[in-house]
Length: 499
Ligand SMILES: Cc1cc2nc3c(=O)[nH]c(=O)nc-3n(C[C@H](O)[C@H](O)[C@H](O)COP(=O)(O)O)c2cc1C
Image (cartoon, rainbow, N blue to C red; front, side):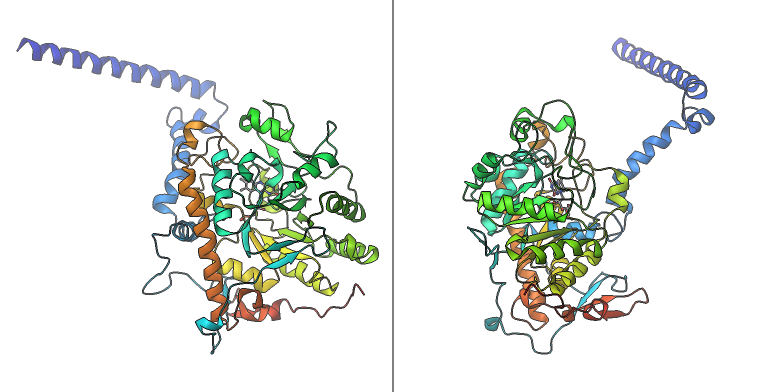
C-alpha cells in the first residue's frame, strides 16, 4: 500500500513539474514571439504561430504518401517513380490489368501510332549498335540506346557510383562521370565510361585551372574511357557552373578534383578559353587529338537559332572539326545543387529543344556525322521512344537511375542528408545503399526500359527502335485531340550541305 502511494506521489510530482515546465516555456515563447520575433505571424499569434512552420514541413513530407494524386507531383510524380521502382525489380512484373489510369487528354502526352501489321517476334530485333566518332583514332561502338547521364562523384556518393558502374557493366550501357573527375569506383566494374570535362576541368586541370594535356592523356589511357564530353551547360542551371557544397567535400573528393576542403566549390560559368563557337571547335579538336577518342559537347539551348552559328562553323572549317556528338539537356533537367530561378525557368524544355536541334542537324546534312544524345525527365519507355521519334540517337538519364538506386525524391541532394545514401557522404546514411543489390536494380531498369521501347517500336510496325520516326507518334494538343509529330515538327529536307 505504502509503495503504491509512493509511486502515485512520484507520478503527481512528475506531472506537476511537466505542467510547470510547459507553462514556463509557453510564457517564455509568448514573450519571445510577441516582442522579439522577426516573423509577423509569430508576433501576431505568439506560440500558435510556431505550429505553422512545423505543419508546413510535415506537409511536404506527408503529402507524397497520403494526399498527392498519382500523377500530380513534381519533378516526378508517383506513377513515374513507381514505374521505375517496379522496372528495377526483376521480381515484380510491370504488367497491369483492367485498364490504364492515365488521362490521355493531357496536352503533350505522346500517343504512338500502331501498325495494322506489326512484325512477328522472329522479324523484330533490338536496336543495332551505332558508331560515334568515326574519324577519331578510337571510335566508340555504342551498344545501348539508354545510358547513364552525368552525375559527379561528389554530388553522388561512393556506393552510388559503384552501384551505377556495376549496373552499367551488367546491362552493357555507358556511364557518364559528370564533372567531378574519374574515381576508382567508376572503373572497378569495367563498364564503358564517358568522361565529362566540366568548366572547372576537375581531374584534368593544371594548378591554374587550365586543361592539362598530360592528365587528359592519362585519363584517355584507360581503355574503359570511351568518349569525352565537354560540358557547356546543363538544363538545371544554364549559364552557371557546377556547385558542390563544402559539406560534401571529403578528402578523397578534394584529391580527385584538385580542390581545397571545407569550402563550397564552384566551377566557372563557362570554359574560360572559349568565347565563341570557333573556340569551342578548337577545344573539341584538341581533346579529340590528345585523347584519340570521340569528343562531343553537352548543352542546354535557349533558342534553336542560337545554335546555327555552331553548325555554320562546322561546315566552314570541315567535318574533321565537328563534335562527334551533342548531348542536349532540357531546361527541366536535374542537378545536385542549383539556384532556384535557373532550375525553374531558364533553358528550353527537351520536348521542344530536341526536335528543333534534330531539324537543324538534318538541315546542315550532319545527321550521320553528329550523334544526338537527349536527356531530361526521359525515364519511362514512352519518353525514350518519343525521343527516338524526335531524332535522338541515344537517350541518357540521371534521375531515372537514381530512382533505380532507391531515391525517394526527398529533394535533399544539396544537404549531405540524403535518406537513401545516394547523395550523401555520411557513412551511417550510406549503410542503406547495398551496392550488390543496387547493381542488379540498375541493370534491370536499363534492360526493362530498353525492352519496352522495343515493344513500342514493334507495335508501331518497325523492326527496331532506331526505325521510329516522327510519323510514329501523335502529341495530344490543348483541345484534347492529337496531332502527328511530323505535322507539328516537319522534318526538313537537307538544305545546307557539308559538300
Ligand atoms: C545529383 C545530380 C548530379 C548531376 N551532376 C551533373 C554533372 O556533374 N554534370 C552534368 O553535366 N550534369 C549533371 N547532372 C544533370 C544530369 O546529367 C542530367 O543532365 C539531368 O538531370 C537531366 O536528366 P534526368 O532528368 O534524367 O535527371 C546531375 C544531375 C543530378 C540529379
